[in-house]
Length: 306
Image (cartoon, rainbow, N blue to C red; front, side):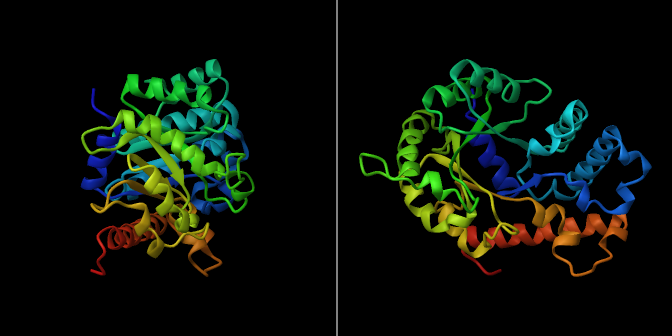
């Protein structure tokens, strides 16, 4: 069976290593998506589906994956889950990899249930899922097993992009090692044993764009794990700092941006009348910013200013 890392790399070569997060927040939706129906949960979720489809249509030719953040769907209960299911189905119809940003992890039996939900062929299953490994190996091994059985992949949290991540992830252990560095060694043990044709494993890791200074050390410890790199744009990650995440072939990492792309019409503009923009104006804004991000990432990957 094909290693999913090879699938991800092949898609990255054909398109780009950019990932667009789908974090729908109706407070940033233009008026054309909002009406009297969006006063109900069902109406809100219908607007979310329309929003996501519009984003997917504009980015599908330029990015390797979309990354729904599950909290933005779960908050609306069963209707939100339906919106997520429809979003996953639509993304697949556009030949985009789906990374469910779920950050799940629990005791072994519960983790296996989570893994079956997100890494099989169920309605919530994408192609990859983010996993919290800090409960220990019995918490993440079930995800590895189910992913391998179903030709899927996962990203284990390691050095996350949030400002307070160092409060826990940078703690010094009794053996003198930093926690996230020790975790990297644990991950490498399983990643090294599950390499595909491109020398990468379907077991990737999350390393925030806001911590590029740590990325070189992490790469040395994890030569066979693809990095999911969130935090580009609004969170403070800069395109010029991304080179350390890639290998010499410009592979080994996928770069995620969410609000900076999907809400570019309001986050990147000083125009206070953004709520009145048309569907066509919103689509153009998202497309333009996506193409710019793609070019910036490629310049760094291939060390060129062209």
